Image (cartoon, rainbow, N blue to C red; front, top):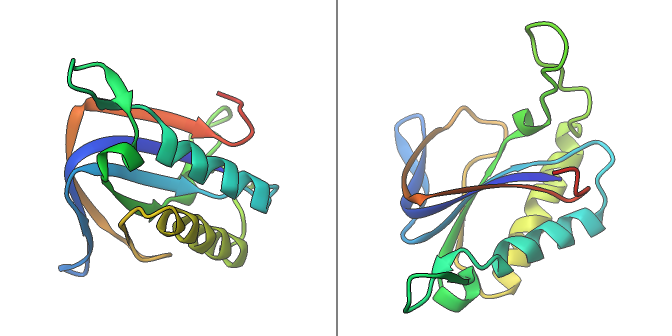
Length: 149
């Protein structure tokens, strides 16, 4: 399971001109599910996201987590995180999970965040979305449950 995590001042997702998910200060999480991912990957990544110490403390050091700051999360499904661009000019997505599995794990990831008390908004699975954000910092991190980076 992979994620691109961005610290934001605000973010929202629009589908067909209507807002489907919106947050204030917190994290925008683009989430990609791989074909070999398990529930352990989902739990690992969700726990990593909520406990990452990437918010400033009173001295300006990145020392506080999403939970510490009572921040929000906006989770957007993005299978293209599994795009392999090493050969040719067109990405290969063969390592991305099939939609049925991806939808289930996307839902489980969101459930874990909510279970930890994080106010969580979402995009719409398998829809074309317009994502709007004000990146805070900017702070952008790449996460992989397989720890390949």
